[in-house]
Image (cartoon, rainbow over all chains, first blue to last red; front, top):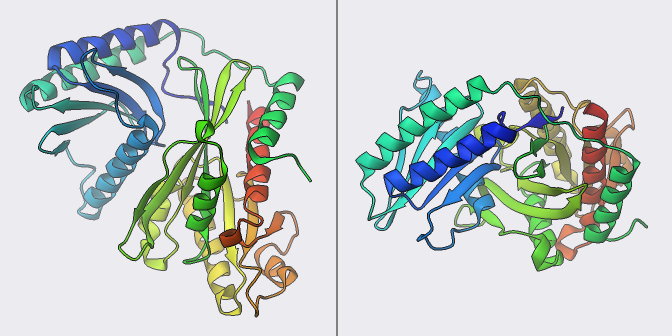
Length: 165
Length: 196
């Protein structure tokens, strides 16, 4: 089944993108990401002053897996989930909030940002993103899987793994 | 289910290497990582125990390239094979698009192969999926073992109906590693086009 990640495209994507910028500015965080629970990055923004982030693919996969593992632990105790997911190191912290059943909003911050501030603005951003998603009335884009698409993918697979024997 | 990110213009697929403990799933990913050119691969992430047994998963992202303006990417995962890590295996199967089942050719692992396949079916059922809906191939690994079971025998046990593609391999020597990945990648792309 063809599945768009959240309903993020067109105008709704632009609004969410602006919200992520706003979250970065107000929380003083370094990076914000929307990650789906399969481990894919849906959207990400970085503060202008922040250094280059580590591999976003690795980050998204580890965050989604960590979240799923925590959820499984909560369920062992009859809980529906844990209320918060916070990790704090000496220099870097991470705060994760559920956006919906399929995606997470992740805020990464350093020692210049206060955890309370990060939590407050991340929670606010979650509510605002949920509103944007619920109001999204635009038609989902479609993709054309024509002969050209089939030929191109075959050629790329041969290029990556070597031609068929 | 493939994830299409229209705003980032990306199509992402999740391919999972499944199989019993020590069948060679992590070895496959390591060999793929070594053989793929730097620009087409990301970091290889391994969550393993001190003795290098997979604890949670291994992860390797691969970039296929641009198709019709969309960046097409495969995320490869392994699961921990040991029986008692089933919770982790179940989590990794979330959103799976294609499966490479890695079977062990050793005579004393035939039963473990069959049990692992049954476990895969059970775990997919929990996500409302069946083996018939998911692109799936089998790699029969460790063909260089002196007492390796005949491939046909393993085939009869794992796929009595004969519908699945099988590939002989010696993953540690990089033999038969890319073929099953290539086959499942093609199946996954065809599957997406059919379902869209």
